[in-house]
Amino acid sequence: MHTPYILIIYTGGTIGMIKNPKSGVLKAFNFKNLLNKIPELQLLECKITTTSLKKPIDSSNTNPKTWIEIAEVIEKGYDKYDGFVVLHGSDTMSYTASALSFMLENLAKPVVLTGSQLPIGDLRTDAKENLITSIQVASLQKNNKPYIKEVCLYFEYKLYRGNRTTKINAEHFEAFASLNYPELAESGVHLKVNDDQLYRPNTRRKLKVHKKMNSNIALVKLFPGITKEVLTATFSASNLKGVILETYGAGNCSTEKWFINLLKETLGKGIPIVNVTQCSGGSVSMGLYETSTQLKKIGIISGRDITTEAAVAKLMYLLQSQLSQIEFKNAFETSLRGELS
Ligand code: ASP
Image (cartoon, rainbow, N blue to C red; front, side, top):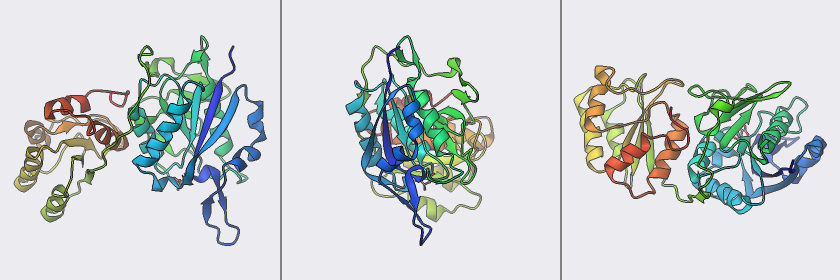
């Protein structure tokens, strides 16, 4: 078997943070210390190289520039390495995983995002297991080729499709969930891969890295009593290019006239609106209730069972392609990287 070459890309986050002994505040530290902290890494049957973003960050400071920087590191090392492990803060890890899944078209190698709830230097840290197993996942091979060929997220014994995940807990080690798609693998005594659930890209196509994301979008979460003033102001923001509407249940919302008219006007300006549910699991099904029939009629896009994180990334990604309104709707409602059922 050929020894897999793995590139670890450190972007920041708790996994590589250290506590200031005086103030107790967590701060990013030099990545080189990470490998010193885990000598066990040398026992793995792969060759590890490490690199780091120019300036490691707390993932709450992530923006599309960060995604582009990560994508470029992967692009540069794509021929040389068999797999990539991206160490990332958990706060926005699902957004980054989703964004990378769209940006890395025809990806045929594993890109595994992981992080931890406790710093690597902490006695009770979850960082070691997450890091070691992520490297093992990235090293998996079948017929001398990478076994996993997609962007995934590993945390607390589970490997998920990255663009299906959501951060669900700020304290538990089990910080992520993928409510609309089964786990890709589970780590116990053995690493059990759910072969049927893996993404199968067309491996004859070459990797294409998309480096433009349009972040002129709004994410609007509805709540009972939301006012016309606030919504009108949001929808008339200058340079607004797309909206994600987080609706209730199976994609329902108020039927008040002013609200529907506002949506119609926005669509009329060529601004696509995507309907995503506020529920953590399940799907939008416009037309199931009277409270969503209007949305379907006026041409709102169905996000179906997409996560809000993946919807944000997909909207930013698709807004960069020159699609007509109809093509845009079709593209959004089609699964591009396994983000929709
Ligand atoms: N605030 C940290 C971050 O997302 C939390 C973590 O690493 O889990 O960068």
